[in-house]
Amino acid sequence: MSSLKFFTSFLLLSVLSSASVSQSVLESKSFENSGLKNNLSTPDFLPYDEAYKLSVSVDEKYLTFNWDIEPGYYLYKSKINVFAEDPNTQINNLFFQKGEFKFDEFFEEDMEVFYTSSMLKASFDSTDNKIYVKLLSQGCADMGLCYPPQENWVSIDKTTNTAQIYNNRPDFFTNSDYRIEGSESSENISVIAALVGAFLGGLILNLMPCVFPVLSIKALSFAQNHKTNRDTRIHALIYTLGVVFSFLIIAALMLSLRAAGESIGWGFQLQSSQFLILLAYLFFFLGLSFLGIVEIGTKLMSLGQNSEANSSIQSSFLTGVLAVTIASPCTAPFMGPALGFAVYQSNAVALLIFVFLGIGMAFPFLLLVLSPNIRNILPKPGKWMDEFKQFLAFPMFFTVVWLLWVIGRQTNITVMSVVIVGLILISMSIWSKKILDRRHLNKNISIKNLAPISLLVLAIILPFWNQTEDQDALLWESFDQARLEDLRSQGNPIFVNITADWCITCLANEKVAFTEKFYSQIKKNNITYLKGDWTNQDAVLTKLLNKHRRNGVPLYLMYPKSGGDPEVLPQILLEGILLKAIDRAVY
Image 1 (tube, rainbow, N blue to C red):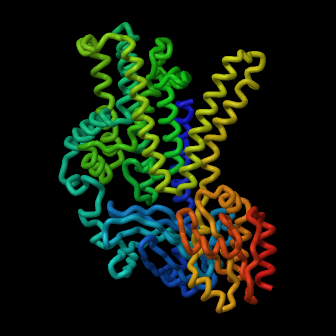
Image 2 (image 1 turned 135 degrees about the horizontal axis):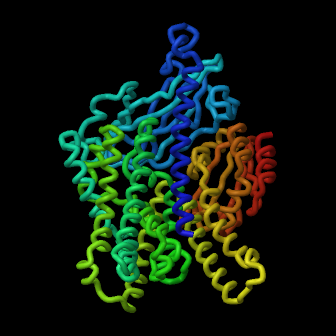
Image 3 (image 1 turned 180 degrees about the vertical axis):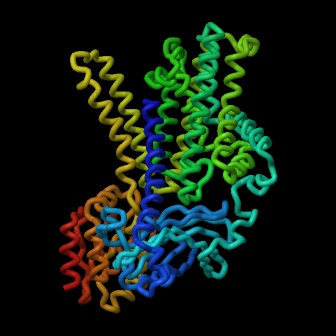
């Protein structure tokens, strides 16, 4: 199962890479097919910056990009993206306004587009007062012109809340203070120095807390079970091949995505929350394997002491692949300058540097299994090996906690919670498999495995099914009593939702009743949506609850446009109940 998860994660990255490269080719083709080169000089079409007038603002939490779009022109939602151009700024979540779908002749599919205006809010973290970002966008005209992908560079001053937009990359964006780690010296180092740095960086990667447990168990089992020098040489070379192959795959993906215009570097796969979820599952599964709770992982990945499994050539290759996968979150000393140098070289030189990175990572293992003298000084096999293996499970679990934290930062607390539920489902799957095996239900193997497999599939599907954009955050305001009174005095219809993170009913209602149709009706009828958070003690919200004879959440109030007392809606909602309440409030 561990190998399956690994290949799934690599397949995911390959698909994402292929999609990105294909997208770039499609964009190029659509540019050529549209006849832009012939039409730009004619008065029929506006220059891009006139057709899509861009403005930028900033507050404590969000960068906001607004486009005023001329009639007859539109922007693609999927072509808008923003990247931090300095290491002290992190772009977290992107929030778009609702667009409309149209069949696009250039991309030959239904695309979500923006007419008249478009807004993107990007939440960010930064320790700097000046922020530097790169903004991508692409638009078309109804008359048959599709512009090529556009790049804007934006410098933002948080102290004055001002922004400067550039159509060409300014010189200060390439200042040494805002470059890839180690790149300030990378231009001055030679290829040989970069190769040595890559080798040393790969060597040090073995000491990382994620990689060390896997290699320790593998090395000890190899020293134990491979009796001949020929066996050890073959398996050591196959392991090295797995390591180098995996580094080459990562390098090829990275170089392809950079060539397609993506701003990425080492560890780019960790910017995908989907990859992080698979990685968290893999680490959790390895931890259970080290504890002896599950055996299938040890047979597939040859992490235990089963001599038959350890003799598998496939197992040695997969161990190399696994080692690189779990090393991907780490950056070791000497890696920075080497990889920074690789970025500015030809593809052949860059790939060679990654090969040396792989050789460096595989070298301690090669040294251990190929040198009889080193193998002879290893402690003799015994019970301590099993205890040592069990202890090494805990670095795996600590890594899972760290990955969960990163997933929460990249997405939201809901997705992180669903991933934890997925970990529990994996545990239930293993437990149910053991129970069914113990009962010797061998008459029908498919039925016996139905429950464990179903739980495992649910664990994998659930986090990805739940990863939706939190667009509703743009459609409500935080509850404020003064704001409520002001809106009521103006005769505006108002919807009030008092909720709490620990309220299961509240969360269920938001999934079931607060649908896209509900939000569109809110926007269409100019209803102000006020949301109060009672997760922590709040005297104002408690007073509001008491006023409407409620001693807990949820509380839903619909204030009519005509004024008067609000309608108190049921605590368990359906979409139809909300839509009817909206109709009563506005008519």
